Image 1 (cartoon, one colour):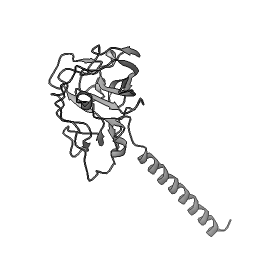
Image 2 (cartoon, rainbow, N blue to C red):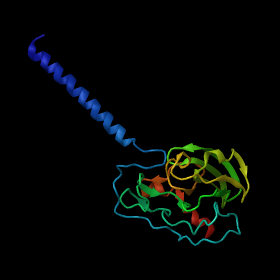
Image 3 (cartoon, rainbow, N blue to C red):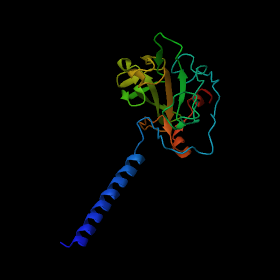
Image 4 (cartoon, one colour):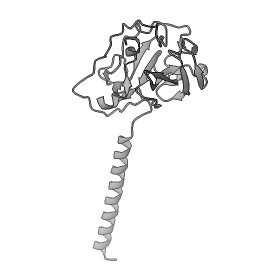
Length: 224
């Protein structure tokens, strides 16, 4: 084979390899979304969403009760719908980026076991450990004639409930101990989120306001 032709084929081969490497890198970056819904490279939007209800809900006489004691008074850092980045987060260091899909009930100051309750009658349809949460379970329930799911995150794995029916006010789990495997390295708090349908979705952060519309501010359950 002539020398010039051999050089040409070598150049083409190198070019193909470079294209494949760049394509692999692009696809890998695009898929770098962990189970908890955080995309590190997501650009910060120009607008933010403020909570639809301030944490003052007190109505527990109807279908719903609080999923944890001092529910509203301990929602102090991450409310529903706020846009979180490692730069603006009230929690430092922060590893997630996106619109917060639930509310966080803070319990770093409590060292004893913190019970978690079924906030309504329903069915536990998922109960396991998940990246970004540690222990997590999901209850399917009906509200206003429509099925929804509620996610409880950062639960002690050994206390996770079995699949099946639960009754309102049942003690069904215990909050995980912070900064360890029980909460996947997160502080001690309950992430409580309500989906607008009956899907199982573990994301703690949505990447767009359109995605966020699949969740409901949990406080609206107590302020009908």
